[in-house]
Length: 435
Ligand code: AHR
View (tube, rainbow, N blue to C red):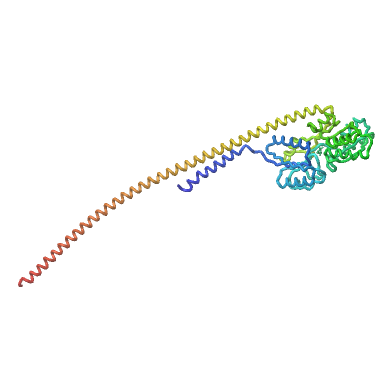
């Protein structure tokens, strides 16, 4: 068997394996993207966004989301963003804690060619690919109009602003103040910036109450949590309930915004939309080089006792649909795993069968060649035996002839000896005979 004979089936096997692996591995032409989501903080509003983003991945198979939450620590968020950049992400979604604080890390991502979507809050730098968030100025304006309407343009307002230097806090306060200024009968009697948490709203109101003893007709909170914290301080301070408490976020779950409006704990709350599905669409439009808008403002609306129940019903339906999608996705995931397993088993089986077939072909070929060689060898042996016999026969004949020649030579020698004796005798006789 020469090298070519051995190599050809092996080459065929290799080609087959490559083709098979291509078939087994095919059917997945999805492009894969890793999207980093850097959150400044951890709260129910952001959990809702993450839920929506997770559901959006069900429709966009190739997307992997990497979340990081900085727990209101700008240095930690900067480190987390830098780690994401170094680990390799295709796009960064970032909700920066404050203006300016994170610019270097976000700018670094942008300068490295990683598309950056600022979500909910801005950095102050122009180095971003797109922005998506609510119009916080409009939210502030809408809340001020509502307060003015409820108080008929007359009353004392305490405002608890959001985290100082964060873009939503700045815009909400500006929208609220500029609109309130249209109503000379409405006065801001106390103000402080919190950190979006309930405790900060409570603390600010306690501080205000230390120096202010007048009436408080309205609390406007930069979000629901801070508005309720301030209300608590008022009640605990023995100043009675506040007639109008307005917040922002209006999250649709028990113990949160819309339910608190339904239960009368809040008078109203402005919806701060999350729209994770639209955020995912924007991210994919950027990644897949489809047209997109750079500035994307989400529309808000006010939740009051009049619409809280209807909105909750609608949200319940959305949650139900979301859970249904989640279950469907789990099922599809399971089915896909089974299909992949089946493909692998079939692939392995075909490989095994092919391997056995090729080994069998090689074996049969080797056996045939061996058999042919044996036959040729036997024929040659027979020929050699015949030739050997012939030689033996010729040697025997030669030996016989040699023996005959020797016999004749011996005979001739004995005749010669006899003749010599006779000659000697004749010579002797000749000497004896007188001349
Ligand atoms: O950035 C805006 C604020 O962030 C939301 O209103 C608040 O609840 C969240 O933590």
